[in-house]
Image 1 (cartoon, rainbow, N blue to C red):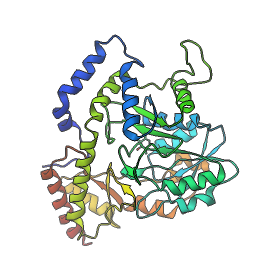
Image 2 (image 1 turned 45 degrees about the horizontal axis):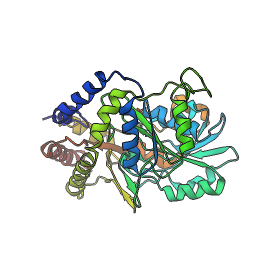
Image 3 (image 1 turned 90 degrees about the horizontal axis):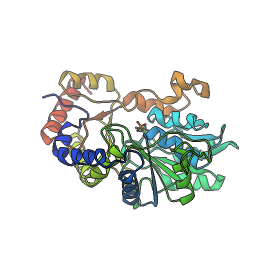
Image 4 (image 1 turned 90 degrees about the vertical axis):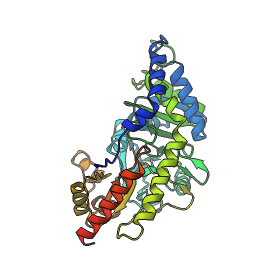
Length: 370
Ligand SMILES: *Cc1c(COP(=O)(O)O)cnc(C)c1O
């Protein structure tokens, strides 16, 4: 039995009727763009995350860009983030006209090391963009403290953290604007692309609605430069249905994580560390080993597919060398990129599949001699 790192078909089988009904309702409604499903999903998702306003958009990359623009990023403004994230976090900063600056990570959680923030602030810094990577919230209290001391805006990248919480607050409610992706693999995902920005500010929400709609409030009249970044009615209808299942998806992810924790505790792998105050949503279950590449090869031979998120730190990529960083600038980020890998993790992964993955991993670790 091959075990995949992610899959959606079993989940689709279980939810087929509601998904097809949601799609049909849109097709028969006579309203395909910015209609009642988008509005209903915006309200429901903002409510779930404990914030006031949601503005749907076309994907998570646009969500980061729109969030930055909405909080006032101007051309040339520096935005501090991390280099161990999905490329879109950084490409969105550039698309917003900003200049990405990187701080290193905490090697235990792989999250932004807030202790390094202060040293990265310059007179041109305008915002801090922490990423709630792998399903766990960054140290938002420390981020907020530095932001307040320097008059900076804070934008959360929540693309991997739907339903994650920290000290009782849900991801997406701890900043000036928070971006989400509903790409299929995410904790809440659709059958295509989708995104959203959350904010507690009515003014920011209004600006976001203009930015995603050619800069318009009334049709055919642009108040400012804008984009076409709308969320489709079809995806909103699907997501509205799936939002009801989100607590179950997260509960199953936590159950799978607890089984990995228990079954792999006596191996030489470094298992995920949960920071105090965090409720991890386990978008990914990330393990660490010095001989990572040999472990992955052994798993593949045994029919278990794993993934590396992410194999190349962004500051070392050709596309971003113009930012002036070099190998060695972010040592913990660079070390982690060589040693981490993520195990099969998605709600419809069965216990039997997980057992196969665990057995293959134990077998491989013995063979690798670690
Ligand atoms: C997936 C992801 C994005 C981009 O989302 P898309 O919907 O694929 O554009 C941005 N940031 C992070 C951290 C992500 O994981």
